[in-house]
Amino acid sequence: MVNVKKVRIALTKGRIEKEAVNMFQRAHIDCSAIMNKGRKLIFHDYKDNIDFVLVKAQDVLTYIEHGVVDMGIVGKDTLLEQNKNFYEVLDLGFGRCKFSLAGPKNSNFYSGYNRKKVATKYPNVARNYFRKLGQDVEIIKIEGSVELAPILGLSDAIVDIVETGNTLRENGLVIYKDICSISARMVVNVASMKMKKSEIQTIIDRVQIQVNTRGKVLS
Ligand code: PRP
Image (tube, rainbow, N blue to C red):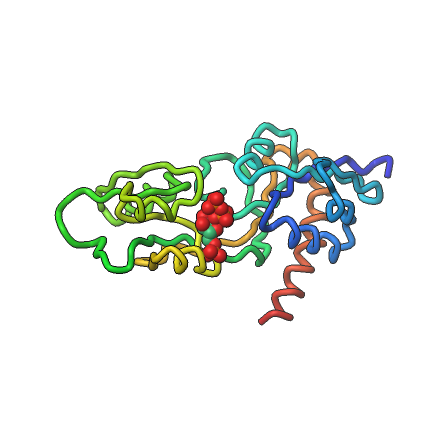
């Protein structure tokens, strides 16, 4: 253990947390303590000298870019939204969902000449999408429950994550266009990739084997 440098890994709290823990467990990297975590935020795997920290999705890349965390598990949605510097090394294949443009069932987003309003938690994703289409829209940033915006008349449509589609359905909204697919990714700090090359590569390799095996089982 003396020569093994400590690696700190940020796990996104919430939706993808359990699958990330299961993935590390299958790779024989012990973070099982997270399953009974209570309010604790930092966990240590003594065998492999790894610190696991639980952070919000929006903060994973901030810790990584500042170099206080070496690696992270975070959704592609967050990577697309934040313009940060990091290496994306693995598509982990879980946390699958998509970005979609959606709105009220009986209205036509593409008709009329008025500048449309689009509410979203992901203004950069939405802006890039409409810029590529050459469509001039007003983007309105919302922090959550974006589906409310067109219902209350704040916007004509939303750009949001769709997983099961239940939230859209239960609020009378439909998908107008799918934008792109999303899944959980493994990311690495640029300097750590050089300074802790062997430790980080070992973790990537062990997880990669699990991702490959799992992919075959599921397909
Ligand atoms: C996300 C997303 C949708 C919902 C989609 O919100 O913004 O509202 O999940 O999932 P579904 O297609 O399975 O219904 P989240 O639950 O993260 O909460 P928020 O709306 O408060 O941000």
